Length: 280
Image 1 (tube, rainbow, N blue to C red):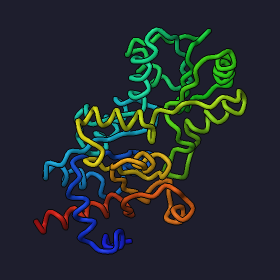
Image 2: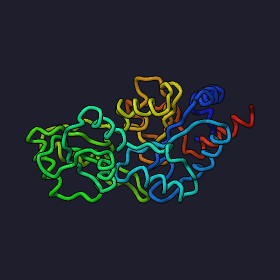
Image 3: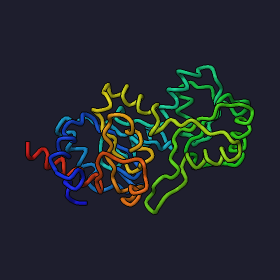
């Protein structure tokens, strides 16, 4: 799929659509990089957007780290982003809890990075008798903590999931993500969590408030149909699927979730933008 005209049938329609976007929201894992490998064309594309005064930000569902870690990672890969350009699912769920459950006690099943975000937000974290259980992408998952989470939920604690992703793409395949951990807890307790990362309306609202834009001004760019692309369903946001991560072209045949546009990679999308601005 090297020719952008294959996306909508004729090239000008794609160009017109891309030209009206005021802000791009880029996923990270499987879109900008895989593990510690930067994907070709990513930084060059960001520089094109920057040069042409097109706003963009990064948003990751990956709650195994926090914003500071991802900012450093992207800087180490060669792009010097500003701190306010990185948004993460941790921020969305914390914002919700602070606004709706300010006095509730919370048990967090997650890495220390996620717990630190909660502590820094002055949320009451506990190890016993929790009112709310928050499950994140816990790469240090301990059976004792899973058992605690299940016990609290059985006793009536509210069950919240930071992000719904079943797998996280890495350089040599995939590893289980927050959605898989939550599925295990659901299998034990019979209780399903409410999720807060992409594609939830919580995340959409958070991004709109952060950018000050409306849905039709924004394009979500990512590699997963059920998160990055599904956030644009039933609203006016543009969604752009890249085939560098979890989703393969054949997956589209059986999915009810369809992107507005499809590109092989950010490198191909970069080439289209080069064409746009060379022709202005």
